Amino acid sequence: MVFSSMVFLFRFLPLFLILYFALGKEYRNFVILLGSLVFYAYGEPIYVLLMILTLFVNYKIARKIYKLHVKEKRSGMDMNYERKKFLKIALFYDFGMLFIFKYLGFFVSIIDLPLNDLIPVPKIALPLGISFYTFQVASYMIDVYRGKHSVKENTALDFCTYVAMFPQLIAGPIVNYSEVKAALRERKVNPVRIEYGVSIFILGLAYKVLLADKIGSLWKDVITIGPYGINMPTAWLGSWGFSMQLFFDFFGYSLMAIGLGHIMGFSFPSNFEDPYISKSATEFWRRWHITLGRWFREYVYIPLGGNRCSKKKWVFNIFLVWFLTGLWHGANWNFIIWGLMFFVILMIEKLFFVKKLEKSKVIGHIYMLILIPVSWTIFNITELKTLGAYLKVMFFIPLEGAVKARAMERFWSLFGTYWWLLLICAFCCLPWPVRWIKKYYKTWQMEKLESSYQNCSDGVRNSVTGRNVFFHDCRVQKSCHVGRQAVW
Image 1 (cartoon, rainbow, N blue to C red):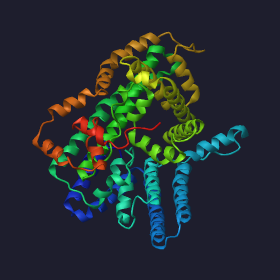
Image 2: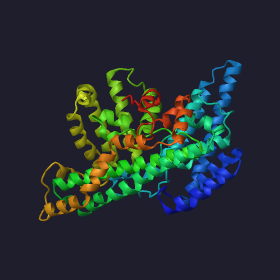
Image 3: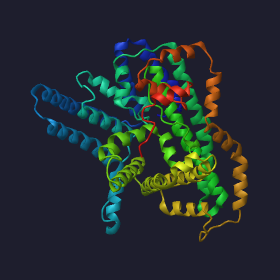
Image 4: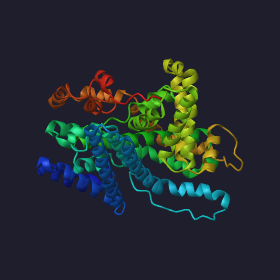
């Protein structure tokens, strides 16, 4: 069930909200959990059992780790070995399930390459959202091990609601427990905040339906023709179209998730901050999928030693992060190539010219105008032979067997159909539209809401004041946006 579907908008969501607001406050977490399981079971009727099992296993182990913390404090004995043992069991289960359902077939196919198809490659359907909820569960377990959360204060219902909450279950943002812990216990919902959440949801829905879905037709038309029937301008046109589709699809979903969160009384972190105005790949990854970058920084990069180590170890740490980032996005070679490509580019930038790029007014933008569509082309085309052919066309390398008789005619036909939509998408990637929305979104409710958050905690401010998500003063956002700076 997707947020833009008729089933969600006119059946599931109205019924869920009626129950959510009709029942008392003490039942709202239960309504969220029940609604989330129904939401998930609509698309994954069998795999909802996998999610329930994951919730059960992790909560039981989290309680065991917490009890060891308490025992350690009372007795003075060092229980770190025992706590780490249970953490390893939890992470082995969580990432083991992720490996089986997402990566087993891919790795079996690699092993089978020299064996000439002797080993049957298992075909296992991928459970929706398993990458997202696995990361959320893993972050919770690690934080419990570190002593950041008291399981005694967190009921099983709170934990299950946090993991299974349907707004951010399928496409993020990846939420840390600390960001919703207080709201899970007590949250205030009023017409002002509901209006605010609805506005954000509608904006995300517009990005998804009016921009992403429409410009997506351009890429479908280009890839249907194939790299052997297009020329260089058409290849770049298609890649720019897919770059816009991916951004507005993902950004739209994030906005809808954040809007739904506000309707229910939660503040989710912002996930995008004008990524397509970046002047370098380094800056781009501070602005794109912020919560994923934060997760890898806090739970992989820093535990490995971050940049507080030898230069060789630092390079290896970045390499591992980007290898895992690529693999996280999908079980195929093109995702690994995509991740390692960014590793190489980021290392070159960091070591040589990133500061010059970010100081430039034109060169950095031209550089990214080339890099972004190339990277998303690698990200999108899973068949390596087709990918290689498409990249050759993009860089004017001749293809054997190419049929270019009507290539220019096809380009002008596609350009004539989509040029205006590309311009609208490019304009909406800039900060100006949100600034204008902020300027003309003048109601007394918004002013009241803005003032009500003046004294909010950093964790709440993070999702309330994101420049590209909400209509608040950007100056506040700079001082309280948790996790916006990616270390690597």
